[in-house]
Length: 173
Image 1 (cartoon, rainbow, N blue to C red):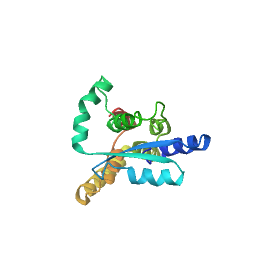
Image 2 (image 1 turned 90 degrees about the vertical axis):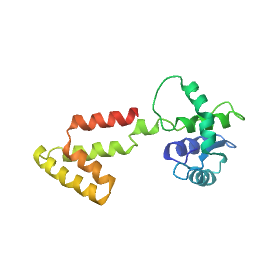
Image 3 (image 1 turned 60 degrees about the vertical axis):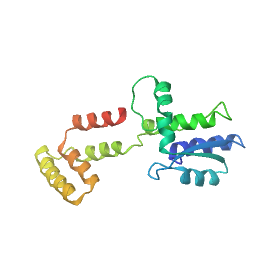
């Protein structure tokens, strides 16, 4: 249970169908990566016993060889280490687990799909005007240090093909 929409939905539906289920959450020392607080709040709200394990940087380094071996081919999934760790912890007590993995890909949950919607709304504007707006917005983003404006500027100045290529690259990262 990460506390995100996908794992929360899976946990809620499963818990409604069968009582006394348990969930597992991995946390990290780094607060930027740690989702245990949100996961525990959700577990409490849906009356689910949540087991939490927190890992530090040394734990992650120690798991790296196992990670490479487990996945056996190069791929880029930023959640793979967390998935491996939660499976290791849960596997000590259970043999079957449900996951919310794949929900964002299936239901367009990532920000880059929002950018696609935006582009489709402005695509009718002539490219020369979009390029001018793009340059202005990119300059503003540079001086204001606002990354979201940088994305908007890139989208306005690009083509549909550029945007689709960018989204494809983000999906396979």
